[in-house]
Image 1 (cartoon, rainbow, N blue to C red):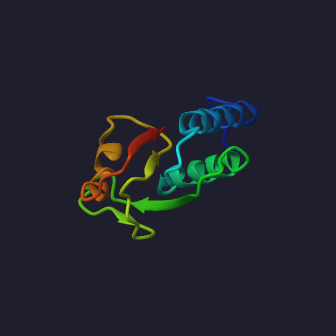
Image 2 (spheres, rainbow, N blue to C red; image 1 turned 90 degrees about the horizontal axis):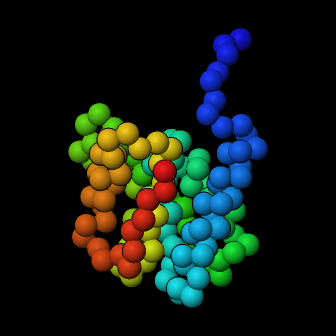
Length: 123
């Protein structure tokens, strides 16, 4: 069995995800606009889904998680799991790591024809 070098223990990762969810809830307090969480496949989607579960007790606004797929080496086409009108919605783009920031930049492409209320990233 290979010895993996983890940065965080499972408990520490859980705590950090809980803290991120609370920060999102705090920022959206008093905001009635719908929240769309876009998880970048594959690991970003896993994190987005976990954040959504943690957000549920704190948000009364409608929110949903969708996925986005792209070729990270040649990101010409970004495919969303659902066609959504992002006008006047809060959008959070979620990925597992940020190296150069290019993936997060390319993830803005499907949003350019809309006017979201807010776009944030969670990495």
